[in-house]
Each structure stands twice: as structure tokens, then as C-alpha cells.
Image (cartoon, rainbow, N blue to C red; front, side, top):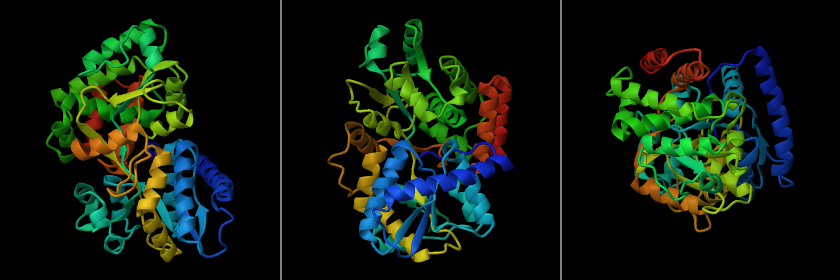
Length: 427
């Protein structure tokens, strides 16, 4: 999924991204074309290059090939940096007038930069053509609409505020794996117990995972209404309530692994799978990692909302666009139709751990976690994720990520961190 750009790549890294793009395309095209057609090519640009993300893409491509036998899927996946390499290469291509036929982005505020730069087209007419206005929930349509227009088609819905835990590690620490934690303070007691047992209490990875964690702590401490206020200006970033939330974040980060900055999310999740850590906060793309490892809940792993966020769904969605200047616009529309179809969404989301955006997709064989997420999305209060492009534009996220990295590596204190967060969001 995942999508998180925080530091602009230099020339050397951009060159690496180009190499990665070539390698990813070659290897994945061979696995996805199913003996494919030699018809018109459709280049689909994503950061789904490995693991459960690639498995989801492969499943979606299978449906695309069935629905469009006269088109040839071309994989433009770029690995590295949880989407940062892909986004930098994409921006270079868009600015050079070399747009792919379609590209992955996050639904919500992340699209604003592309809209302002006139790099993507309004696809509202496709919602009518494909019957999506009735197939997608009304509140999702509202979140996708910008000044009366819609600029992307969502392939899924993810939840960011999920704790994953190893029940054996918890039991060995003297904890009840079925225990519920009402708030951060109660959770800290459990973290202390895991730490005393000699295991890592809270597995963590590089900067974007720390920003994902930060937003869930803000949500826990502030509540949904005040959390939403961080993005509409009604909550003061420099106020005492935010200070208290950041103090919680500071405390919780002391329970994380010292090698976190050299890891990515699969590594942090693997620590739960291997029994090296007690808890991990990660979006529900982690569900597919547990399934891929052959694990079953609640025997091998458990999950619950971040303490203090029960009843709140921290929302994000992967989506696809129709770029201005797409070489094969008809092919791009065919991809968007597959992405939005009931069959495409069922195949993709079952493999990726997320849930369909469509309400009529067949989810009867989805995992227990996914069934719980479907119910939660229907009943919980919905808020927008910061780390995954729903709450704020990319430029804001970049600044938040820089400030977070400085703070968690000891390069700034809490007061400076809070001030830099305020400046990042308020401009």
C-alpha cells in the first residue's frame, strides 16, 4: 500500500528508482501477463512491487486480463521506500509529459497536488458509466469529491488504527491475550510487562510507520472530533491537548526497537510473526502478511483498534487516476472499470487484506479480520489518515515526516516537534 513520501530523492536515488522500475516491470510482467495479449498496452504505475501488495496486484491483473483479452497489461511498479521512489519518479515523468496510462494514488487530500497541477482528469462520468454512485457508500463518494468533481477510482478501503499482537508473547509476559485496553495508560502497563519479559514491547519501522503511529496516538488522545479539527483548523496544533498527545507519543516510542529506522513495515510485522515483539501498530495490509505466513487468529495473532480509538475507523483508500496525456486513455478506462468492478475488488482485497469499496462485492470467503473491518466501516466514526494521503496534501505530509524523523532520532525536543508540526499543517 502503502504511499508515504517524506524526503525528496536526490539524483542518485532517482536513478535507482529508474532501475527499480525497469526491474519490477520485467519480473512482474512475466508473472502477470498470463500468456497475455499482444494488443494495445496499458501501463499501470504503482508501488505494489512485493509481498501482499504484489499479490493483490496480481489478482487484479488476472481479472483485468479476463475482462480485456485484447489489451496487454504493462506493470509500471516501482519498489522502494514504501512509495517514495514511485512518487518521485512519477512526478518526474508527469512534468516531462511522459504520463503512464494510469497511476496509483491515495484518495483524499493527496490528490490535490495533481489536481492543482492539472495532471489528472475528472472521472465523474465514469462513475455514471460504471454504476459506481450506487455501488460505493455515499460517505465515500463525498470523500472522493473535490469541488463537485471526482478524480480517482478506489480499489479498496484500508484501516490504519490497528494493533497486531502475538498472543504467546503476551501470555509469556503474564498478560491476558484477550484483555482490552481502554486508553494509552492501560496499554503502557501491558508494554511494561512485555519489556520485563525480555521481548520488544512495540515493533516499529522507518519514518512513515512512525507517522502512521503518530496519527493513531493523536486520534486516541484527542478523540475523533478534535482529531478532525487538526485538518480543518478548529483544533490548535500548539494547544495543550496536542502537547499531551505528543507526550504520549514520546513515551510510547521508548518501547520500540532500536533498529526501527533501518526497517520497513514487513520487518516490523515479522517481529510479531516470529514472536520477537508483543505489539505492532500498522494498517490492515498487515493482515495479508499473517495470512501469507499461514497464521490464524486468535491462535497465532490478535488484533484490535489502537487503545482509545475503539469505534473510530482511520480511513485510507488506494485509488487509480486518469492522467492528462495518458497514451492509451481507452485502455486506462478499461483498467479503471476492472478496478471498480465487483470481481476486481473481491479478488484484489482478499489478497491484500483490505476491504472492497463496493458494497456489493462478494466477501463471503474473506478473513475474520476483514469481516470485522467491513462491519466497522459501516458503523464506526470515519476519520482520514495523515500518513496515507487522506487528511493532508503531500507537501504537508513531507514536512510532518521530516519533523517526526528529527524528533524520534533525538534531533529535536518535544516543544520543537510540536512547533514544527503546527508550521507543517498551517503553512
